[in-house]
Length: 137
Length: 229
Image 1: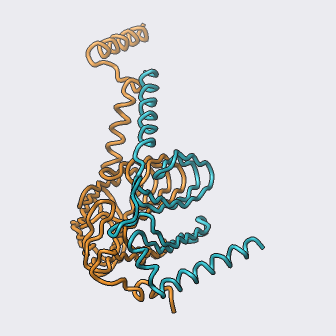
Image 2: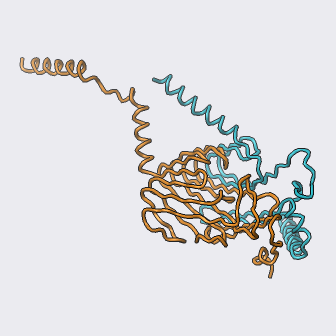
Image 3: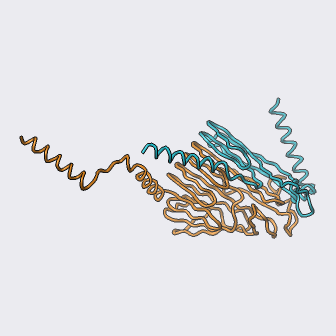
């Protein structure tokens, strides 16, 4: 009986480990995660992560195929984006807010030509720089 | 003398029961009992199946969705309590509270957008079928069965678990205990995507996508209407 239970548990753990090793996504993805407790996970294109306690993470995965230069119809490398995540205290009911502006490929090229969007990105870059300086001080 | 006779009769009855009825051993049938309990709990609690264009929910499920309008983003929030499981695109089993939110963007322009190798048309509309009438924009409780049909896969997913859960699939492979919140955004390639999300007001989220293959020009003022004065 004990042997059978141990074998079943072993199989379950083995399957879980196998499952965690597989399934790496090869797609463009932005992910955020907040953990309070125990978390054993594998995020896209990442190795296995074990967290005990409190942790938070933000991940951007932009896979680029090998030998894929920009063409008239496709451009893997052009990226224009802002990724703003705000976490509060989960026990006080503070919210999670995401603000993301993201353009890839030909859309990024097109967006970079627009004066309004240039102004917008310049303004955001200024805000980020100012906030960073305030934090350092 | 009477006591001895009674004892003898009891022993005889026990021997008869052992021979003809058999003895139920809880240890021997522990796995079977656990299996039966798991099945009972599953039927009594929420179970979700998400595959292709349909989503099926069995058991008690709290459900909330934004207005089904092709001209704006579609947001759906599903909450299950107790022992819950899910299958299809993502497999998992858990205990506690599971909160799953999915959104499809408002597509600016007419052309098709390719997101994760699946075609996304200008319509991101969804349809619902329930045994009882559904109120849009408010929480609904489905006790038995709820079905949701959709045109495309969601491009934004937020998953929160309060309790324990094992997940395997496209979104994440994880074993978690505690309070875990995860979000995923899969923006389509050669596109511009804008996302504004506040988990206090999830149905009011803003999620728009413009594709470079679109026949329409990049609508800058519409994209930046909340960011520029």
